[in-house]
Length: 313
Image 1: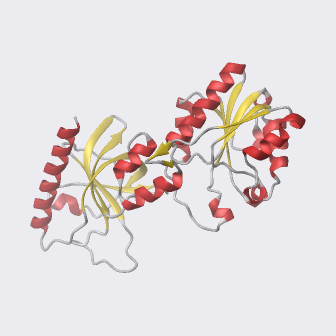
Image 2: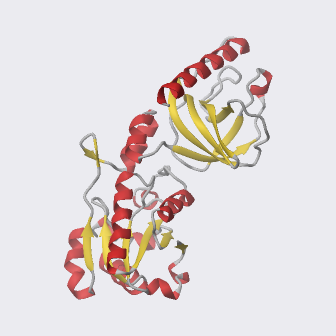
Image 3: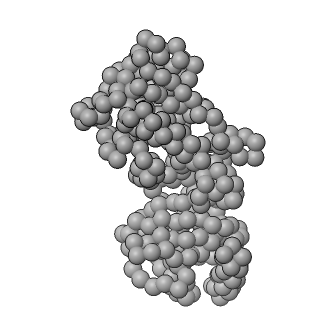
């Protein structure tokens, strides 16, 4: 898959006839997967290239002036698209110029003239252009004059409602990993860099990797069981998100940290980029009277997690 971050840098072959789909595709959930699968299948049926136009920044940062934590890094989104057979991805920055572009102009100048769209495919809730008025119905009015075909994809449902990135983001914030996994079609993951901490875990026999997440949505504070993906393979881990109240007084300025204790593993992960796969919420974060009490609870957490893994095997 070719990736082009600016329309100005589009290779000449990008203007070949194509089927184009567009959207944020945050999380690449089951609904997004249905759209990508249809785009690839359609392009192969008519013998043209499959193209995804996505956004490196979330539109809500411009349209609503608020920060929206991504469920995935852009790199992970693009990797997922590539694995599904997309030929060309165009991850654009969403800025005020794009937000103010009339939808007909967006379709004609980018999708038709620059990307050679012969087919344009939209998810059920995808909008584009100024004020978000571009949608499937508008595309249908442009088909004849711009010589393309527009199609929509029906939503994928979970518990009777369409799957969306917003729904998944809300479930992550609640710590509902099961619903999150069901809507994503895979466990929720977080990618981050291992940084140096105060090494408190080593003093009680449970060394941890301190992880700085790469701007993604996170489950609420607590203790979780999961899997940590390393360059040499995966290891199960106990993961704590929180404020470490046993060691540090919690104030209004305290920032949560992520620490992962890899089971039956020793090594140096500093500066590594690793991925956490969240599997189960084990308990809330607790302040213990002594380090011994904390160590005993970690042993209990491990036992609970191992029972979960055994029952899931």
